[in-house]
Length: 595
Image 1: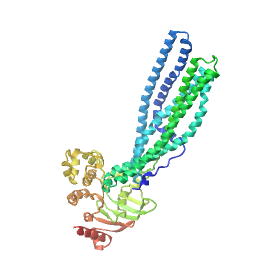
Image 2 (image 1 turned 60 degrees about the vertical axis):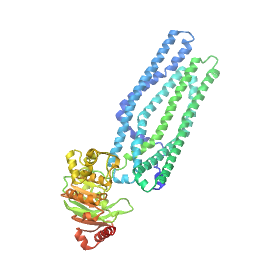
Image 3 (image 1 turned 180 degrees about the vertical axis):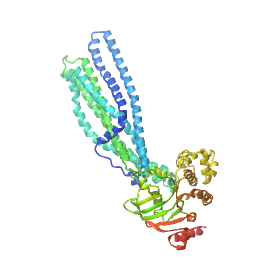
Image 4 (image 1 turned 90 degrees about the horizontal axis):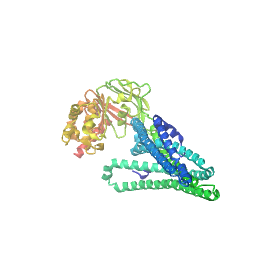
């Protein structure tokens, strides 16, 4: 795989787009009452906390100089009570927001996953799976805190600033104005740094996505890597992608780390100005020590919410890009979906008709050109032809994994584009060349075809397709745990389990796309009885590499050049000495030569 394939970054919007936040409000509305409660609790706790400097001022200017111990102890008791109330309310608020945040994660991830389940094959064909995975896991985790605590903290910090300003002016107007003189300096600083931060964190998002996509693919393809001794080359690509992540992260962190020192430096300068103005310029006994200490405390408080707002703003800059990617996925059109007037598919008898069907995966090449044929109920049809001729495309269109570009596909004279997808596919059994095995037990994997199946039904289906023999030899039999993608099973064993799963679902239309390609000839012969049982009474479409396995089919169609070149039984096509004859004899010659 070329290095540049994984270094392609997804384009992100340059400006901070508020429309994403407005759209995200749909996930916040249901928790609005609890969020308002959290705001009220935090507001009360904060307001109590900001009374503390005024109590300290009263202690320094009155209780201590007058040696009024009763007043001093009273003020200390009030101060302790204030901090207790503040801590209790903040703790309650934190618990509320943890719950709200997790609920928002659940809601977004649920919508994402349900939408991904409906997206057509084309979506997954065009994207690395790692880039899809990072959106469902990492991006959702990142934006959840922004949509819960982030929004609440904006409101709270704005209220905190308001409370602090009010209390400062209550203590001393002149000194309060000194503190506010630092605000324009901060505004200029934040304006300078915000655009650099957004671009830097967008770059981090892209590079992490590239790394995740490459890592996921290499984990899945680890065996191929070792077979072709690609370890060094892959390590080199991974090293470059990791360096990209490190470089962009360091750049982004450098900009983010400027925020706190910048605000802190302005804060220190302002507090120095407080003492300078308080003791020298406004001095001569006009400003008491208690006033200066109180204003200094409020100045410290004043910059804290500003610093917090800066951090929140950083978080928004970082996560708006993630939110954009999440909504981009949710907005991905479901091109294969139920029509508005779709009706449930009646019980399928098995007549399949292609009526002048045309299809292309993209604009560059047409796969099927005006294809028409009819298969009667119970007939078995073999599709043969060169690689890329359109055999798998035909069976994919029968299952409506793609929409046709022209013409119609009908089952029992019913246009399948006018029936619900679930009612159609639930009556079909599809066996692909790549037999996917889920994590869990062997029994769970077979039951996937019929969730309410009993153990007896599972065993019966397994025996018919010759899977029971190897399953019972395993230590835990049908309760054997198989790892992700069935890594502990051979490819042939996976296919036999898939056969049992398909048979258990009792489909009306059966599609076998190179379904026996990984099964040895001896097992395939033993399986033939089970295959005949599967095919009996069902309309079936079979794509097979070994032509000897399809000789008994009712009809064989040779597919090439976007259409059906010839149709007939094995004997009829052999007698014609056309396309099928040449393909069959060439394969027979290869077998004899190899023997």
